[in-house]
Length: 378
Image 1 (cartoon, helix red, strand yellow):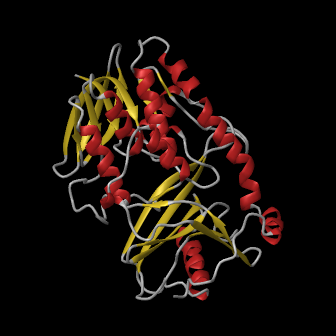
Image 2: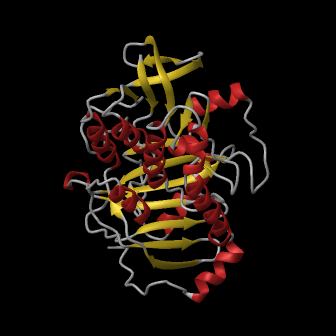
């Protein structure tokens, strides 16, 4: 029997495993194939732009983690270009990012976790279900290549398996956790993310990350990011809407501006995203079940950034689980208060970013914007 089974080996799960694996027997599960080539491996690629914002950089610094050069991707970006189709304006704002290969980044954090004597990684394995017993949790896992189903037991189960978390969904069903609410509280709003990679034409230059606003496409966020010899286009579109139609509109608008998005993409990925409300969207767990990272609802409601929340919540949970068993959930909830306040603050900021009538005057004022030479056509 394990001390911990962690579903999901992203930044939240690997941080937790690394922090607690010295003295505990930890099983780290991940449904991805993490043993292939590092760069752009397809099946292991997460629907993520792969940018570390200043908060994520700070989170890594707090963990004492420096990144090796092999994880970095050109170009390194120092600004965001805001393209507002609703108000027919563009502005460039200073923003310091570290541009990374997201697959290589995840694998590096896993390598750090595996250096701990108690950590075992089981990849290509999906957690399907679990049941809480009196003093342990029994989980059912599927090894995807072989189709083999196994039952494993641990004292504690941690869901770090992202927005589509099976642990979170099963827990909500079994413990009847309320999912209703209004625009300020209750369940997070669900989005479908689509991301396509295009070959970057020779001579094309794009020295910024683009944030794109168009209410006909989404009430949230679309993005465009240069990566080595390719260009990523992505959007988070409300669940239930016509994803392909809206994404095609976005692509056509950007092609009209001169961005090289014609033809078939070299790769496409999709994912679920939960945009938290101001209050009540974060679920930390119950009994012998804990959640961290995006599985807990910890993600920015203004930018969809989740890496910093994943690293910090994984580390916070490690601190809590190092203490006596009684009162752990209350201690974890207290530890998460700072992250919940950040989410509430960013929820207040969101209308200024995503409501065209509020965003327009900010763009007109040119507040905090930079004057730059327009070079995105090469």
